Length: 274
Image 1: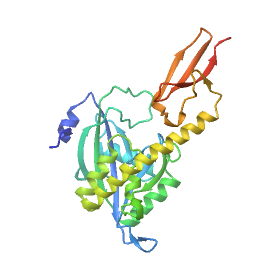
Image 2: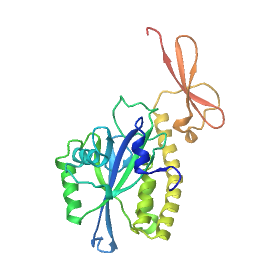
Image 3: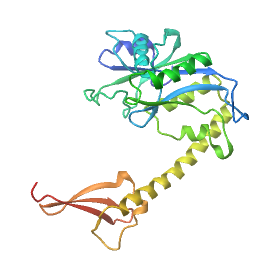
Image 4: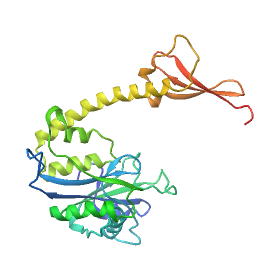
């Protein structure tokens, strides 16, 4: 058993843990993009309420329901269809990454141990299309916890676009690893093609970092910043993680954006009358 993986029995034995079940729904297809690029398979994921990509599913309570019953309940809420999921569809269980969160509930403790259970279910293409239609028209969570269903592009276009670009997006918890593992295990994408896609994703991340810095510079330019030190800082190399607060007099607080050269631009907030 791979490191970090749990058997179903081991996972369920952890009664003090929270449990979350998610499923990858997929089908084969003969359709082509632009009548030229074979799509080969349809894999459904979703854009979550937190802006991250993930698979359909959510928290379940093994003391009140089976894992599969809980997953089907979550699918009804998120997809608008009560899809049956069986034990045979179960792929694996593991402890979720520390930063993972699978629920919007504010009552969930961030320190709680979460075990994720992953399932894969193959369907007919028309069934997949029915799920997509229901998710946008009848699902109670549409527009709230789920912002929309997305298909995973398994093809690679010129410049590494397609699968490579998709994999460069932000995923919740271990969803990206679950996707990559499933692509390899089910032979949905050739290993060498997947390797190229992931390599392209790393390049995309580098370019995205530059774009984010430029976007951050635009926001700084439109805020009445107070220069605390001269010369003026080069705000183009600032990142959100470099925010910090500086305490000035008892009537003001300076919020500083620290640049790599040690200078900062600060927005002064006057506390008079607070």
